Image (cartoon, rainbow, N blue to C red; front, side):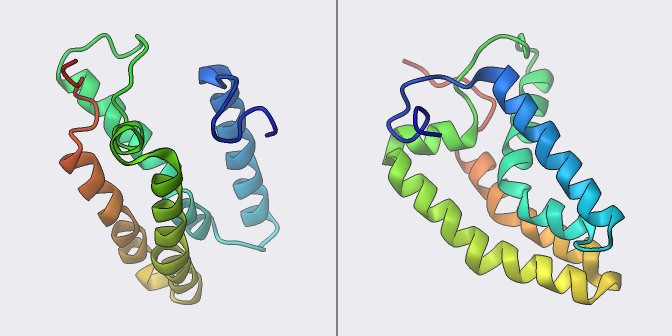
Length: 140
């Protein structure tokens, strides 16, 4: 964390982010197994991380790009280049607190509405991915 705090001095890369994703996923499954936090609540709270990556990967596949090649076309990356990392992180934190946390709570308290809460959690990130053209390379 010390070396990756903005401005980052090291690059985590796919290996580091894959490890973190797997670890967080396993923690979410363990919380579900112990009946502490429903899986849908964890998935709602983790939307900022998995949605942009999934959308960008799908866009790169559909547009026939070499989807395994390095790129800088995630919505988060494009927003951060345009507005700065501090602003982007702050807005992401605000959305998590004001939008995602209440939806996760709702999904936990009203299991019948959990799919709706899950779908609603994706709305701001879908808007960001579409408006920033995630997965589409920027022209230099």
